[in-house]
Length: 258
Ligand SMILES: [Zn+2]
Image: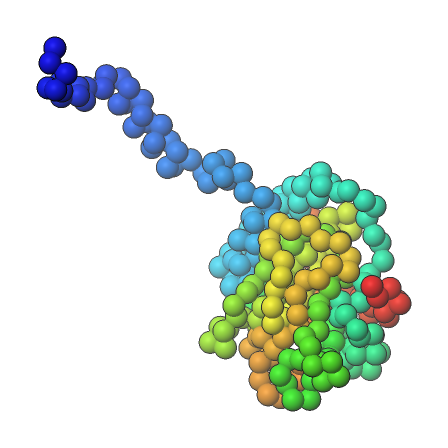
């Protein structure tokens, strides 16, 4: 055969093979996504929380799903557990103590009418506001001229973050972080941050940097609001997170600053 005259390639593929390929493609398209992607349960938690926050899911359905996710998070957490679980609560603002907690002896904690599943529309104030020295509201510490670090009060897995909050957003927490501590069945919520320096699925230890204090969120953004971190602790039983008052733990935590 003359090597300069190429034979056209034969494009014939056996028909049974085409049928098999089409079946495989269609199966992959219609397969439920968790089977395909094997997402980390922290990502599942984040997606579920967006639906809770924006009230796009019935409460019972969300509670059931949360109850299914918590054991998965616990498994993932225990697999990566390297050292002992630190039990003490770290004060979440670097360079500050419990003297900076708003109200009189933690009176800012108001749990009446609050329900986790009310999401962004929730009533009450089931946490503490911890204020920084920022008279000019530039988000920097007036004494040091530097941002104030938010540190993790507890070990755990980052299960949700919100970044790039804009004043047009209706999200009250602004840039926030949720950390789940599976062995204590606790959720820690940090709100109104400027910068968020952790990602979903990341394992954190108590005292690890999470980001910096900011003024993000519908109310925290307004001039009348002094610059603060909003800090809430929930304890979850079978997927129903209920707030607990961490005031006494925060007072003790002031002595464990790194
Ligand atoms: Zn608050």
